[in-house]
Length: 421
Image (cartoon, rainbow, N blue to C red; front, side, top):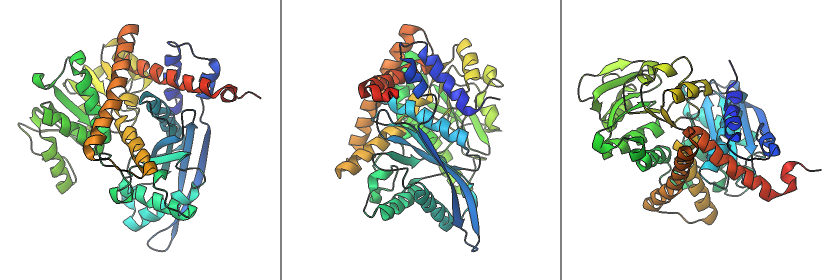
């Protein structure tokens, strides 16, 4: 099977067919600018030391400092980190943010660490990569199994290393440490704004009581479900890493989330009718109007794409659909709203946080929500129109949109950007 990174670069080649772009730009984007690997030696609570592999990748900084999350997961590897950094490069360009793409990861199961061990691991990451990251160089953020508290530890450690407070080094921090209001629900809210903006074009809407299934029930998925539910969309299925629940009569995502918090699972959650428990893979294949994959990469593949019946897929996860699956979905006329557009709300509000840290002036929640909408909607509109005009799928349209912005930035840099001697 092809590496995740190789599959990701197929998106670049597909976009290049629809835009007149200099070959040097494409070559520049085929590999990351720089990647650093480190071994984090961490003191455990029992006095022993354990080593954890860690990485940080700065993929491309043509449009500005690199930006991207730090993932704690036992299966994190270099291939995944480079791929996520590649996607971030294009996501930031789609959102028209003055950033390039970056990503980081640690191969660890954070559920097996105590809070004190997790803090020591996070501070060790800041120490190992303190010369690699920086407010004007590379700005991390939360990702899978990292949160505001982890970001706060890293920001605090970095500030100690450089000898002065440096809140802009990282985003997604706790509010008292310079975090932005509205960051918690930003990814889900961005997906919600995207759906509501083109719902008439997609043939869905609250007045039709359109049915939504969400694979994954973490922070982004929950907030998207809550906002859609409050507007009248019908949530009929959700899942977590262990199981899935489905009820065609409807679920209240708020009640389901509260149940999950109490029981640490979805089984037995309150529902409007007869609740069915399924596997994650089975949930993807259930009848609905909108399917929202919001878990990990490669969930929709050539093995299950032909069994997907949802006419619309909105990717809140990063890379949930493989290129092979895309081809199958396109033949079935399934509209895929791609990850680099649908989940760009998180990095957009991270940008707002960085701006506020730089200015030392913080915005009320209403202003954050308003600014997020004004960033999201014009890009959705432009990508949708390009899709319609060219008769191409929405993912390719989004990559063309991003590639055009990156190519323009490369040209604006002059001959240095083309590695002239």
